[in-house]
Length: 39
Image (cartoon, rainbow, N blue to C red; front, side, top):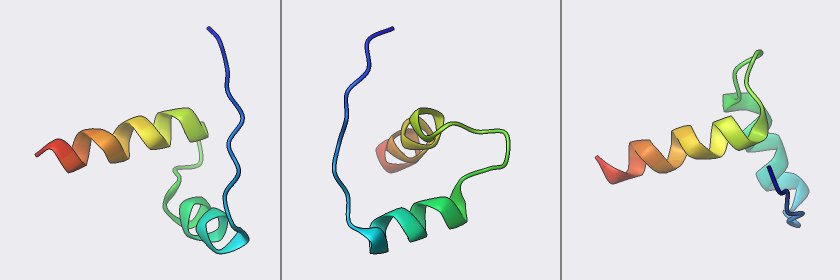
């Protein structure tokens, strides 16, 4: 799988890390958040 780098602020990172599950990658987190927005 190809990968991409993105830049985010420390504030955004801290918010993401709080909602990220322990066994979840950031890619999985983003997919979960995107799916929840479609509903």
